[in-house]
Each structure stands twice: as C-alpha cells, then as structure tokens.
Amino acid sequence: MNKLELVVFNVGHGLSVALIERPENYVTLVDLGAETGFTPLKYLSLNMKLRPDVLFITHPHADHLDDVETALDARFSPLGLHFQIYDWQDVKKREMKDLAYKVDDFLKLQKQVSFRNYGGSARLTAWRYTPEGARKSFGETSYVNNSSLFLVYVWRDFKITIAGDLESDGMAGMVGTKTVQEAALSTDILIPSHHGHKNGFPTEWIEKMGKPYVSIISVQERDKSVDSRYNSSEFARGIQFNGETRYSLTTRKDGNIMITMWYGSDGGARWSFASF
Ligand SMILES: [Zn+2]
Image 1 (cartoon, rainbow, N blue to C red):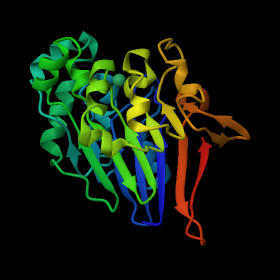
Image 2: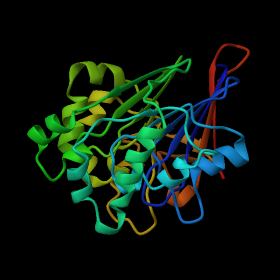
Image 3: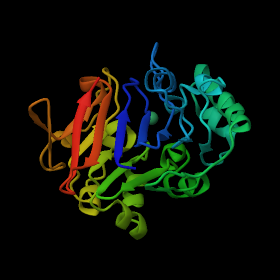
C-alpha cells in the first residue's frame, strides 16, 4: 500500500466507514449504515468500482445494518464478513418492531458470505466484550451497544480507531484495559463511540488514548445528543479543513468525508481532508 483512503459516509443516523488501500484496492467496510436514496455499497461499486473484501459489523443494531438488503444482492455483496455471535432472537426482540427484519436479513447474509478476518496490508485489531461479558458487566439494556467491536487500524504512522456504539461504561472499560489502551494510544483519527453521544464519552478516554488530531462523527441532523467537547482543542489537536481549524468533522455538517493518507518523497507522512 502506498496510499490509504478513509471514507466516513453520510448515512444520517447510522455508521458506515470504508478503509481503502491503494493501489491494491483492498477494502474494509465497517458497518452497513445507509440513508434513503444512498447506500455506501452501491456508491463503492458504481462510483469507485470497489467491493468490500471484508465487512465488519461492530454490533447488530438496525442503524449499523440498514444496508443489509444491498449486501444480499450478489452484485454488491462483500466478499467476507466479520461479526460476533449473539442470541439473535434476543437482539431481534430488543430492536424496534419495524426494523427487526434487518436482523433476519443479517442472518441470511451470514449464510451467503463467509466469515473472514482482515487480510489487507495494514494491521487491524478488533477488541470486544462478548455479548455475555457485556451483559454481565454493563447490564441487560445496553449489552448490544457495549459488545461493539472496538477497531484499531494501523498503517505505518497512521492510527485510526473506530469505537462502535460503546456506551460510557463500556468505553471506559475498553480503554481502561491495558492491552487495548496500548493499542489505541496515540490514535490520530478517532471515530468516537455511539455517534459522538454524551453517553459514550467517559472523560478518561483522552488520558488513555491521547489527543487525536480529529474526531469524525457520524450523526444525523436532528440528533441533539452529540457531546460538544469533541469540537474543542481540549479533546483534539485540530486539522485544517477548507481553510479552517477543526477539531471534529461531522457527517451532518460536512457530508461524506474522505481522508487521504500517503508519504511524500521526503518520507514524511501527509494527509488531506475533503468532503463530497
Ligand atoms: Zn448506532
């Protein structure tokens, strides 16, 4: 790989993130968020001529599975799938009634696409509480969020952390675990837990992980729960975006966000930020 593209798609309330390794075109997709009239899988295929080599589902909630019907379509289907095993009936029962069919469609996808680990040329580690562990530690009502995969992706000097929908106690437990903390330390780009919500913001994450350059938050317009501290110099080092210093970027303000990372001829790490 000599170039990495990170795309955080604008999927309203949900999450869908692509890591694209160039020139190999190895694609890791994290979650299946989608928005009316916009699906990341079709965008990848039709506009970028790409197909995910592996799809990670951080946790089986509808806002992370929205695009599962597209994934079931052989033209757009990912080549591999990575997820945790749940008591699917219980997951379904806890989902909103009109969205519970997404879980059934996800079960179909599991039959259609083989389980696989990350196989690109960077290093991707998925940390997790098991569903049972999360239930015991954090309780019945939040265990699906708190069993989210916590993904740390490292390519040379670049470190990207994607925190799923961990809630505050799950997030505190995760970054409070020594091995995870060491892995996430000095994250450059943080995709904060639980859509940047206040209930996914245990203040100690900053001491454990260090100050990222920027947080990128996938959140819809109407959502009032975003923690404003992400957008402050106390919680990010800041980047230049369209001539402004920004501490956080959000899909609702900035749309689809693309970060390109590469190395200059002097060997120095470079990146650029754009939206589309
Ligand atoms: Zn979510």
